[in-house]
Image (cartoon, rainbow, N blue to C red):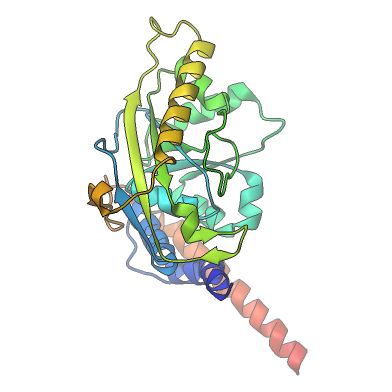
Length: 285
């Protein structure tokens, strides 16, 4: 329990402070790397590639990952070499302010409301983001929710799969086995562990083979279930490791951070901290 609270403290308090006052940050992905490294080191997880396939950076590719804990965003950044553009509900920003902090500084999160979302406007926004002006590739959790401890596949949500068909976006599965062993918010357990990352082949929506969106969805849904169930049916050892994933490696680190936004965040943080400190001193006196 103590270790869990320590990690939560690092995520909510320490990481924003260290990033805010790190004056060596030059690029958006460097900022993400430093955020994720703080959390990565605090949870003590080791990430290993256990598939022959590796990550693809094909144009307009969409990564599908399994969602296990609320720190998955950190793990997904590392295993995509800081190239993930996340889809996230607005509710997450209230419970994990660090995600909104990332949005402000690095523009790597798309917030949306689960209900009352205009599909046309939403898809147009995704198309704009996929122009890759920030060097990111869309990352989604197609299960639609965290599935901590559930070691069997479920049916995927249809929205992004339909979108990929309509816009000829390839899909790659990135399924990580064991990441909820490191940080489990349901049981308040945090421990050192190994996690094994599997990159699938790249799936492309061939319109001659898949005649409509439903055909494409059924294919992707079945492939996901087969991959997921196979991965979660095994116990892994060092023999299954292809290579250790380097948390320091950044792919395409050429997108400068907005210094105005970064400095503004520092001013806001200092002002908020001083106001908080003043309130405490006034209360004590």
